[in-house]
Image (cartoon, rainbow, N blue to C red; front, side, top):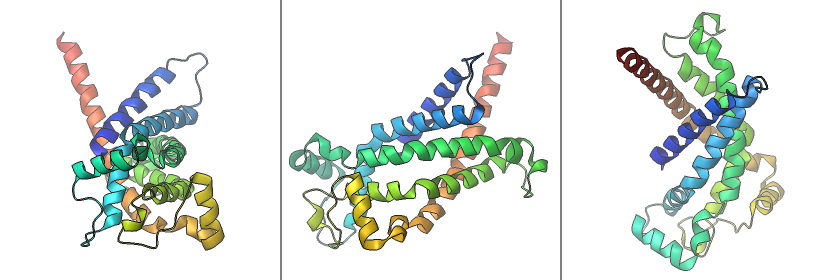
Length: 237
């Protein structure tokens, strides 16, 4: 899922960024360009890989107990297709896209705003950074800010993914029944308060921050190598 997601996301992000840069003399402000490119890349990547995300969540929810809902990846695909139909693979997709569009938009807008200082000119950064770590540091800060801002929708996405005919068979039998994005948000807010919408945020940040650091550091290094190769190839011609 992550291989496919990353490929679609960065291809869309880079392509959209290049297209928006050609809008002169009516070019959009840089933060707006980054937001649009990031939001579009995240939305398309999420929608195209969503069935894999749903399967991952269901396998994680069923645990490793004796009473397992799905025995294998093939069995899970077959079972969902038979009992829930094609739409079963996209249960909660609207919440996922609704969460990822502002998340990736905010992430890339923040990242591109921080990168000139933290990566290109680290001596201007208020925090001393080791050489070559600016991209990773910008990715960490951008991830924390963006993830915190849209976390309730990420929580709703995961709650909806474990719904359906097999909900009662999961190891954790106390999973309530949710119907739709707004119904889920309202039910969580009424029963658990505002804190319920941020349940698991700390763990999510611990996971997302280093992942974003590695992703952006790798992306920038790979992009630089490809650009250098393209320049060298052009000189040889």
